[in-house]
Length: 149
Image (cartoon, rainbow, N blue to C red; front, top):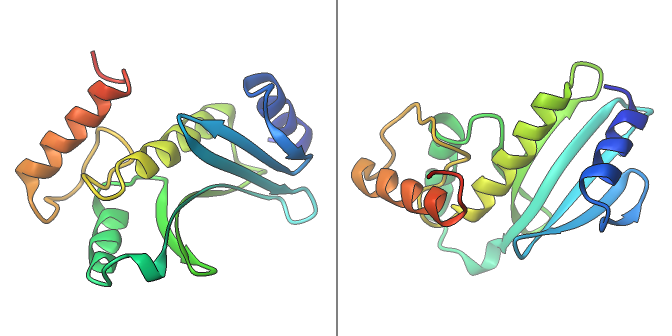
């Protein structure tokens, strides 16, 4: 994907996007999604701020790492500048529109399930800290957001 294709994807899919080219802000389901891209470095990021690090119990960090391994697929939980984030990071050159669509949805879902099932979608490669509770929470979240009929 070229930078101008990413720009078109943002502008066509989110005409209400704010910010400037290469640094777009989108309000999606009450979350502020930021899409950052730099054509000089050929990279892009979709990021959503979740919580201040100082406001969460440190025991959550191991759960975030577990989710990154088992249930967030291409999205990840990350820590930067005093905040916990839901992120999708990818090189522009090998990025396809399908990957971008999926990465956006996964990042949004990981943000929405932060604190419950810690997942970016339906697929889970592990058991989580409480498999039954995690699966139930994930299914409830998917039903709530009309992603599961």
